[in-house]
Length: 224
Image (tube, rainbow, N blue to C red):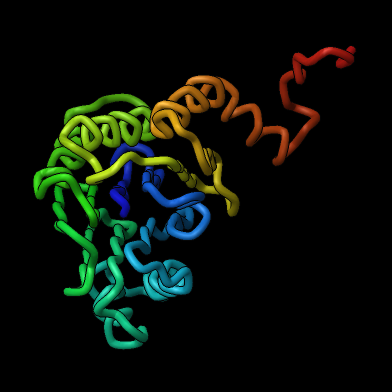
């Protein structure tokens, strides 16, 4: 009941992931990324421990394929899990257990991997990969383009209700973490709208955290 991608920007070293599902609050359970390390999606019958585990393994020196192999060896009920990973060199790996739900499949490209379950058709992950690779600009723009491409290719078999986008870069916290936990409208478009608002302020929010003395004004009523 989910489709997603994990990706790396070759120019900046940023990592990002985006995800959408018919389930509520999908990004709260399935989205993981760590600056300088990689990004992970842990989905299908979700085990939220697998994302941090894969990131720890990659931070410890394993490649994405090695980390996913170790996750498969350690995790309980791995046949029910779908886990996607990308590492600091852009290497990707995907585990899709045989008990993944409905139509499930996966696709990989340079600096990007996508997977999904309960899909409308088997072409959705490849459409997501192609959408990411065809897009230009900030990794956030490319993640949105990829998710729109996946939705246009059919997306999930039923309507999606939640979505999220997570981006990390250099600092220890996410530089963007946008979520739509439930809507009867398109959650991917809700995230896209939030990104249009957030993107111009992203650098200012980082600067305010690092040194508020050098940060731009807040530009809100009462900020004199």
